[in-house]
Image 1 (cartoon, rainbow, N blue to C red):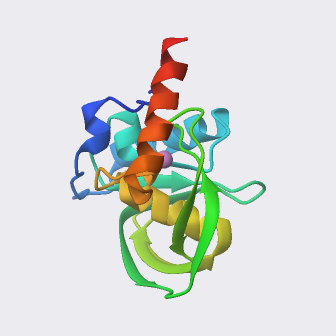
Image 2 (image 1 turned 30 degrees about the vertical axis):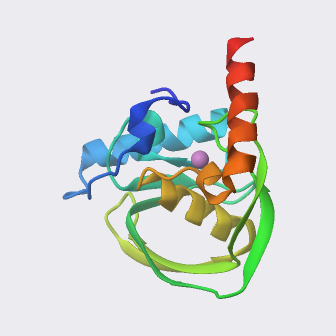
Length: 161
Ligand code: NI
């Protein structure tokens, strides 16, 4: 399992729902968490490893890893926050992104148990960022075209070095 980076078409495609949370899915979730920790990220979504299904994992420092399967947003706050974001699929690219401050999300875990989570701060931001990945959306898509093009030029330059 390796992380796909910008330019790979899979990062721009929508993913499919997972029909059955079987041992294969559990295995993939565990591998994704392992890779996430190894890469020192806080979130990783299926498409980033070429697995085109609705799953992402999240792990903030010191808290246990969370697996979200077939996640859906129930509610987001009207209040927003601006914070710097990066992405394992866009190494070296960082930018301020405005997102809702809190989110309530429903999903299934790797054991097939449904759960609802209401959170704010970094975890809310991470969840919203990863949800975007499931629909082929990257954090740079939330920026102005000028800002995005500037970052992309910088990214491409970095990739050539
Ligand atoms: Ni990302």
